[in-house]
Length: 224
Image (cartoon, rainbow, N blue to C red; front, side, top):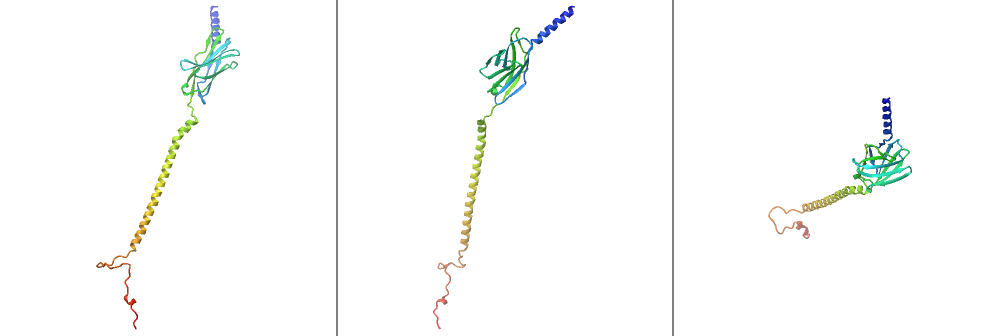
C-alpha cells in the first residue's frame, strides 16, 4: 500500500516538473543580410502561466540584454538596448518570439540566447540555457568603397597607357630624324663623287678642273 502511495506522489511530482518546464528552440547560426537579421525563438510550455517575458541576450555570459518584451494576453510592453535597433514580435498561438535586428555592425557578431520567463502566477519559471545562435555580420561594401578600391587600378592603367604612348611617340620622332639624316648623307656622298679629281703629276696652279682644253685649230681663220 505504501509503495503505491509513493509511486503516485512521484508521478504527480514528475508531471508538475514537466508541466512547469519551458523548452526553447533556436537556430544555431544566422548570417546577417545587409546588416539585418531576424532570430526566431520557438518555445514549448504547457503550464497555466498567463504573463510572460521574452528577452534576447548577447554573449556567452548573457551579460548584455539586447531587447525584451512582456505580454499578458494582447498587451505587449517592449524595451530595447540603446546600442541596438531591435523589435520583438510575439505569436502566442504558434508560441514563437521573433527578434528583428537591423543596422548591425561587425563588432556585434556574437552568440545570442533567447530567454522565456513565466512571470505570473507563481512559481517563477524560466527556460534552461539553450545552445544559442551565432549571428554573423558581414562587412558591408558600399559603392563608394568599391569605387575607391578601383581608383588606384584605373590610375595605374592610365599612367601606363600614357607612358606607352609617349615611348611610341619618341621612338617615331627618333626614327624620322635618323632617316632624314641618313638621306642627307646619301645625297652629300653622291655630290662629292661627281667632283673631278686633280690629274696626276706635278700640280699646276693655273689648272682649271672645270674648263675643258681648248683646241686652237678651231679658232684659226680659214686659209685657202
